Figure 1 (cartoon, rainbow, N blue to C red):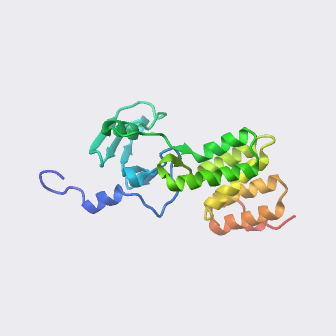
Figure 2: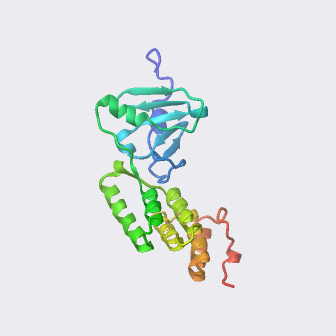
Length: 222
């Protein structure tokens, strides 16, 4: 408002600073997980509690707004490769504790590289996601993060089964994601599991016929 006049419609302000719950995956994968909403970015991680938003400018310049504390933080910068310190600053200002969330995909990667087998990694995932259901502020996970970890482990000698297990988790977590099904199909192909690979490719094409990299004509077994 300016001079008692509403300059920007209140409805637009509300819509542009409120999370779109129909979109479950972030557009930018970071620990705070960014969703773009009509010129503002919303950190999805624990957003229901924080309800913050920010403008992200060139080379890391940002305007961060935290309505609950009535704080606005302006960051001048010349390097976009930087931390996202705002929630930590707000919590310090309010005298509240702050802890960075645990990356569930990161934990799976560490476990796989430490020698955990496929079953152990899947059990770890189920335990962490159960904990996240109780304490959502303490954990973070995304489809893209799981796919990336699965593909990373799949490419490492001796960890192919673990990588495949993580990609199965990604497809289970995001059953409507053609990317998850494509990644899993490639993992099955690598393991010689042809029928499963075909099934996953068919699902990828069904979900996104214009985006999936595998055409229906190539799905028949050789």
